[in-house]
Image (tube, rainbow, N blue to C red; front, side, top):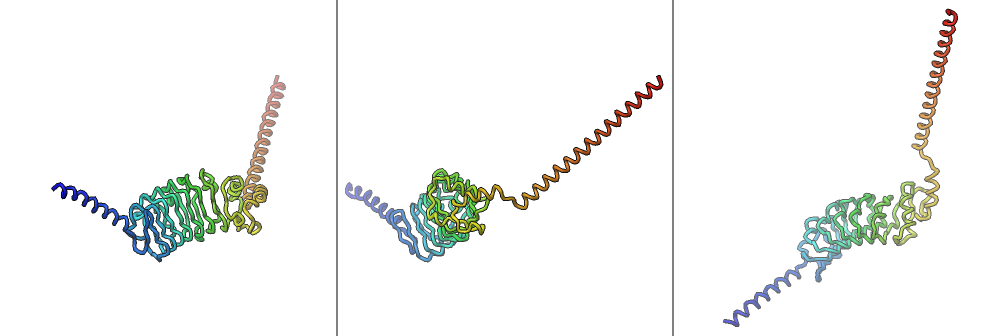
Length: 292
């Protein structure tokens, strides 16, 4: 009896261990799995893979045909720290997609079809350190407060996109930023962009491929390196007047002329009235003297 009683707990432990082992070996179809890692690279997947182990920390979905990341399925992977989605067809519907993966440290969205980044896109990724969005030719807008919550962001790459403008505060307010990729974008180097160019020359951030961080427009600054045009922009922005400036100056001049004319007219009327009352007073005094 004692022998069989001792064998029963051992049998339960064995069965429990086999169950845990089978759970760990559970792997999505057409993917390979190692300890805490799922790799689905180049499997021509059109959808987010099902049955990903819940303890997965590294998920690689690179080089597929995925156009949508389901927020609910992602939220099941609460321990995910590494997500590689490069070379897919992800579009602009990423707002609130990463709401359930707050531990994410590394996110690669390069070579996709992103069009914009809003505050809601990455606002829940409070631990994000590396964010790659290069080679998204349709990415034309990043909101001013897009990275407000990503204060640990150290590596940001937006090279080879459609960006023409980036607000200075978007990157200047990232205290841990050390690497910023900006090359081969159609930057519009006008007076509105001068503050950003000045920040580039003064910051301690590293700009890789700096020779290709150039102005695309206006024509006079085409292919000029952005930090090199700072002095020229300073001069032109301080001296150049646009149509609205001339209109404003004309309005100010007209108002000053009208105000001056009105003031002179009112002063003239006051003088005439004063002289009239003074002469009338003198006449009355003369009449009184004559009567007396």
